[in-house]
Length: 365
Image: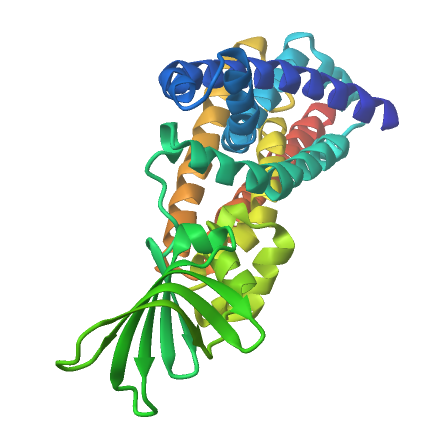
């Protein structure tokens, strides 16, 4: 069993590395052809800005391409095992179909850890810088919830620009001064503000009282409101820009009352569920071949594996999108497709195993 595990895992990882290099390389090349002129216009030099963009873009490309790469690498591994009759040798040596799936545990471990590190470390670190470049897919990327964030402090309501809040800056503030009954008393605009012990120190202030009173222009104004800028900054980022601990914090506090948390809840669950789905894609081709498959069955099996894989990816993408906007429950949107694919893999492996046992019993009879 240990020798089979080492051999099959090595075969898969070699093909995975080759397919990943080829697919990611082509994707990065075409992306560079699309945005290279814009990257160069926004920076000095030629080589270093392009290399920096490639390094920043690679994690987001990898997280999008890993499911396809995993499926193709697994299919190529199974086809090669069938071509040289190595699967037949394994089966004749007493290795069951489920035992063959268990041989892939090192592959699943590598995929789980790799996918999690990319989604939880690399992607959150690179998306803000890609958005700042304003090129390619990130040119028109808006902050979640719109351009502004609204925060309540006492009876007052404060509006902050989402992009500035995401960076921890207090700029272009709009404060609605209200009484205890919620009636508007004045509208206060400030170009910037500083956090002080007793509230905010507003700069370049324009105060417009309700009614016919004239507007006041003040160089500075102390206002007794408190803003937890860390929470506002957290909610001003896209959910996939947050790490796992930050997502847990947002979901536990229900978005801190700043914005809905359906997107964060969905991304939190999908960060784990998508890794399991990646493992299921690696196992799927190994559940497809029959014990007495001929060499000519490789192409139909390859097509069947691609078909099932693409159905899973489309179904999973739709459910995640519905979960992020709150049309389906977040847990359902994140877990239904991966768990369904795992069930399909186990059913296929069990069905083919029972058929093999029945065929062997008939031969002995």
